[in-house]
Amino acid sequence: MADIKFRNESDGSDFQMPHPKAVRVLADIDAWAQKNGFEHVVFWRDPEDEHKFWVQLGEDKLNYWIHSNTFTDGKHETVEMQMDYARGAQRRSAAGYGKFDK
Image (cartoon, rainbow, N blue to C red):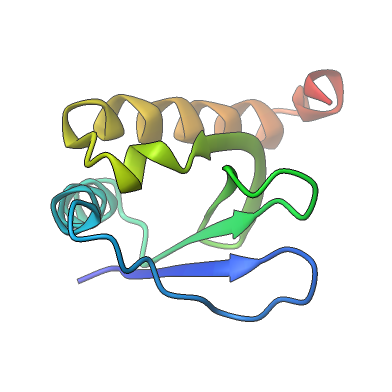
């Protein structure tokens, strides 16, 4: 099972994703993380826009965010695609292209 956390960007504190519809989304993220070899996934809430959750895969905090309604609306059918995009952002950054994405 992957360690999936939600944190506030402003102070690093953890918070819970209490929405009942988020359970299925989190299960899909866990399955995706295990399939792709990520033990840790962190979603950082943007201090200027609380609906943006910046993605961190493993130790890599990415220039890619997922909207909060993915969790609150239970959009499990799109979360795998979004996580694949996040992994693509991680690969771009590792290849040195991250500086062009900002």
